[in-house]
Image 1: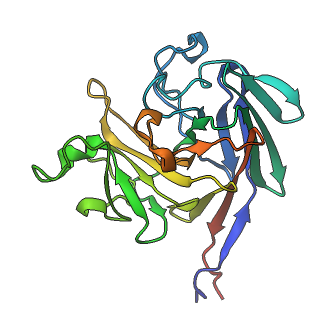
Image 2 (image 1 turned 90 degrees about the horizontal axis):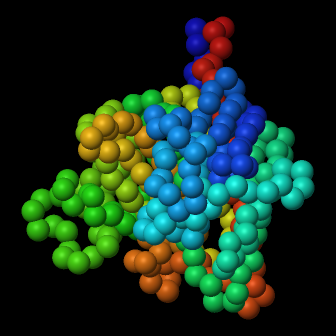
Length: 287
């Protein structure tokens, strides 16, 4: 006789990153599972600053924008320098970003600090591309305001997209009637969305759960979703699913209004924390 499913048990995570090539997280592993997806494109080590984005997978640090110019921001294509145990930094003309990653009993904690002139506006995202099965789903609070971005217009009835608008807002998990919480199977579509004022989500894939949570006082916190189910790029599409904790509420800094970005306060610094934890649901034992 089986007693039923037991509660989820913590799975310790370990992270690896490549400071020399944009500070990219190259591995997030625990319980025999690698959570980060690896992309099909080669040439990441040959990238020049502000060059075309190379989709190598992993988790990219996107700052001060995600889409727009430069694509995926300024910091992914430049080397970061070590500044202490688990800590790296990158300096740009208008800001300095420092990141420290620690392991707290198997939970990965990334602490960030951005120094810039007061009033400096930016968007940041932890662009995490995940290796997920077609049965995976994204759990977020029902009713969360969700901004669909223009590539979703092709999936809506003619005339449904508001002319000239950078996004269309609906409610999670079915904004404008599109079911977004299902992360597969592949159907040839690709779309981006931002779950506004949503700092904590959980990815569920079979018995495994990955929780991503963003903490930051006084700044807008969201979660971006890039759900590419074999719909992009047009010439040679592949599958990639991004779940991206974000400061701000827009992919492109150029589209963002005053409430859609983080803003450096008079003290000249913004600090935030990203926490990633994993759990596994174990089946009950026979008796």
